[in-house]
Image 1 (cartoon, rainbow, N blue to C red):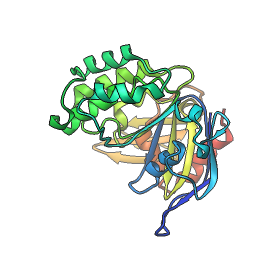
Image 2 (cartoon, rainbow, N blue to C red):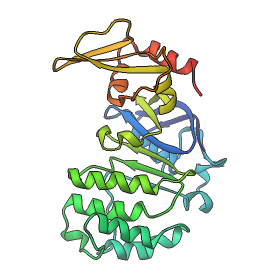
Image 3 (spheres, rainbow, N blue to C red):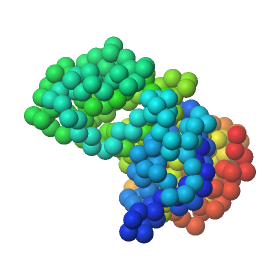
Image 4 (spheres, rainbow, N blue to C red):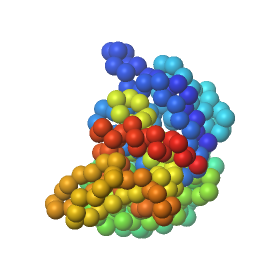
Amino acid sequence: MITAKNLSYVYDNGAEAVVDTSFTIGSGLYLMLGENGAGKTTLLHLLSGLLYPTSGTVTIDGEDVKKRLPSTLSNLFFLPEAMEIPTDTVRQFAGLHSPFYNDFSTESFGDNLTDFGLTGNENMRALSFGTRHKSVLAYVLALGVNHLFLDEPANGLDIQSRHRLRAMMARTMTEDSTVIVSTHTVSDLEQLFDGVIIMHHGRVVLCDKTENIARCLKFITTIERPDDVLYVEHEMGLYHAIAINRDDEYSEVDFRLLYSSLFSAAAPFIISTLNSQQL
């Protein structure tokens, strides 16, 4: 369980990156969305204990992350958009770094490398950005931590590698895992997301489970403009709309459309609909 309570972070220049944010999430794979500069990366740093909050708290399984207890840090990992490692190969790095993580799996590490077409003995300095990133992903997804925060994990990956990343993440998840993925490429993992966190100007404007969103809202695509909807877009001859789900049938969540709707005049109606029926 991850809980942020009245969380704020102000940089030395006075810029507010995270503003009085509160939310709680349990296990599952969460999509984090927000415009550039919304505070997503700063929030991930706060959740992982890499930054101290200006005010407020973050607790993971009841422990204050700010204390940086070994029991907490050994069970979480934050992977930034680009991570440089200080060794020649990722296998050398794993040999130095993995002892801090009790549930690291050598077998999973090897399987992940194989899936990416790597051995782990490649000279990292001679690799392209995308291949270096695959090497690091193969290692990070074998750590066995319950709390994993990924910033643009598909960045630099080709289509085939993105499909393999999806399969790796699916087999990495356990019933105790909480994974937050900050990304602009929603489609890569769209069918795996259990929930969504949407940020705007440093605030979390929505934090909800996919199940609740699908139960409360209906996502519609049609060639004719639909009536009685909360939000609608017209693109390439099709209408994409969000309406109140009145028939209790599961509706596939369109995360991109949901994100767009929350920066429109429909936002208060959509949020109130979700909040009134949260599980």
